[in-house]
Figure 1 (cartoon, rainbow, N blue to C red):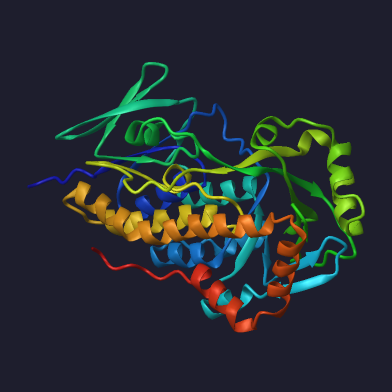
Figure 2: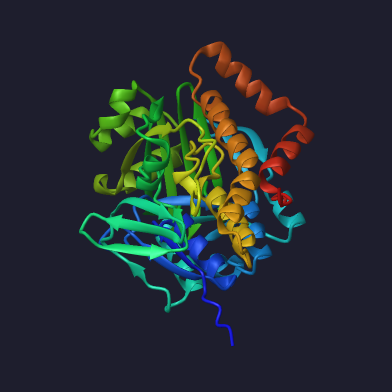
Length: 393
């Protein structure tokens, strides 16, 4: 009798991409081992969007998160683009694509999304915490990962899902400098209600060189973010008082100032706007990358988490039943490269447009968003939100 050993996948990183990959790979019958450098699973950051393209991709491989997200977050059907004083410019109807796919778009706190993914993963796949990967070695039988405390682990496949500062990417691609885009982002979640903020509200307020987002994430909470053009060095190190943020948005719609005032300063996260040059080669042999480790992107499309989830779905499809694991990983990379490259580039383009501050550019932007035919935006929404599987190469 021949006993077939289950293939073991090592995942570095227990963020959105790593947990989603673990859930999909276990669904395909693979053994999974997750290692996370943090000493506790306390998610950094605030809120984010999980769009219908990610959820339809996961549903195709047997991981359906719709019910859990409906319980823990808030679905939304539209993004309202407004002037800084609250006057409307355009409503982007993202729900039309979601409804066509029998799916939904959600705004969620990272902690709630993390719990949804841990529930999908199950209790019998624990996360090894305090495990900071420092490198890996490949041989003809698999891959060994080394950790900072002297430990090591061995498996058949290594997935680098360790985010923007990925140690696995650094070994694959060498030292890199991030691309900085000349603005900072403030992020926060807070218990908040306002008459201008109905259930499922997503508002994007625009002015020259700065923006503000106000989003209902359910259970009486709001997620807000703000941007402001500043030199890259300032964006990297800003640590000013909340009064400076309030001054940035003085005279804006009343709900904008109210959300900021409601938020304790220590709950406001500040990050620079940055990504990396698109990486064409994600791995070799039994090693590959996923999510922000492979293709970090700016936040303008709200697709960073969704791209990691799509990655996880395609990776599971490629590894399911595969005999030649390196070939399966190259197939995964080939299927994902064009779409993720387009998302990175589109996020950069939209970010640049959103942060325009010269009067003529700002006026052109508003005229376009106000008067372009609805069919233009419907086509753009479909390109982003309709996940279409790519055939094996």
